[in-house]
Image (cartoon, helix red, strand yellow):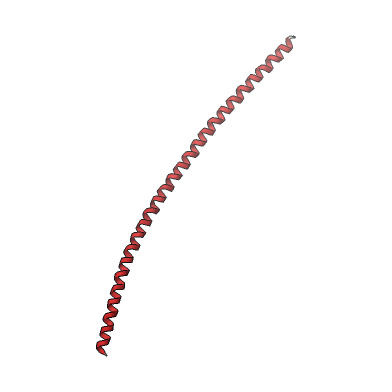
Length: 99
C-alpha cells in the first residue's frame, strides 16, 4: 500500500472514531437534558395535582358546611311551619269567638 493510502485510511478512521464519539456524547447529553426536563415536568404535574387535591378537600368541606346549613334551615322551617299552623288555629279561634 502506498503511504498516501495509509494516511488517508488513518485520517478516515480517526474521523470515524471522532464522529462516533461526538454522536455518543451528543446522545448522552440529549438524554440528560431530557431527563432533567422530564423531572421538571413531573414535578410541575405533582405540584398541580397537590393543588387539585387541596381544592377538592376545600370543596368537600364547603359541601359539608352547606349540608349543615341546609339541615339547620330545614329544622327552622319545620319550627316556623308549626308556629304558623298554631297561629292559624289561634286566629281561627279568635274569629269564631268574635262571630
